Image 1 (tube, rainbow, N blue to C red):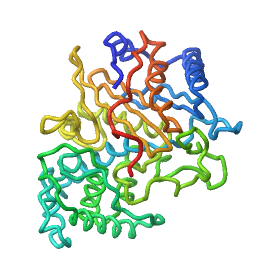
Image 2: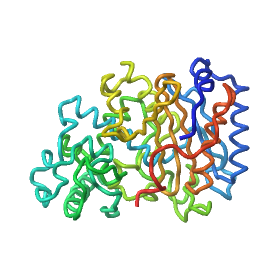
Image 3: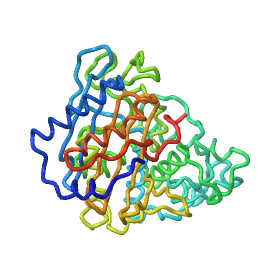
Image 4: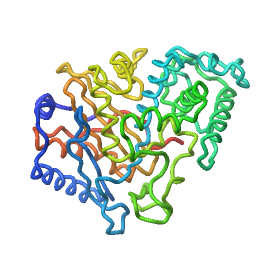
Length: 382
């Protein structure tokens, strides 16, 4: 991820709320970056323990139109959803519904084919940290949203995964896997007898006040009432709306959309949580979620990086090939920055670091432009 310098972090950590003039300066810089790289829209937020302290948006909801994106618009978060699914797993563990070492075989003793598969011994921890041995493989069909149908579809995904041949033993190979998150989400569905979507709304969104969060693509089909997704060449997709996304079954790995303020509420919870100030989980559970396992730098929906100055940064990115988002959290300094774009081509992925710098430059020396933060090795979840 782009390097966060100590001077930049320290200055931001102690700053009061931004003045209108400062916000205008950052908005102008965001517009400069967006125009330079010909992106449809960019959005970002500076987040503290209290949520979004500065929200900035630049550009239009759809390329070729004059409909401006707004601060209340919804943005697809892609694989940044994974941190939310892991948080939901933490809720289940604290409630005694699951253990971190619960296996697929424990939870699904009657699943077809699972008894003959090494996947039976894959734990909840291994599924959420990409140590299950599963690949990022498409084993889902396209279905309309229906909570009960999605539980059945994820059950079918489990059976298909159990039929995969030659899987590495769980814990032996680190493979980034959207499929692993789908099965972790299905474990949650099994122990609660509710869909992952229903659980997210009841146990994550509602307690955190995330009233502008949901699943799938955004907007009313055919209307430019929300940011519109864009293809690799920067042109708008032929259609928009809830169905313009990866198949709904992939939900636990990456179908959440949210307003910037809602996303900031979730991020603020992860800033507050390790200090015992969170609303959802105990402090030790948050610290567990932020800690990598088995020698990798991947934690539970986060990539954790120890900086030379002693601070820990946790980060992730997300894309469904039509949107791109990044989040970078520095728990030791009580600060985070999130950025998003309704375009996922190389230009948007490369220049998000510039956006992070734009959000910071009022408070100190801007961070250096660099590669995107950790998350999907490539856009999308095919």
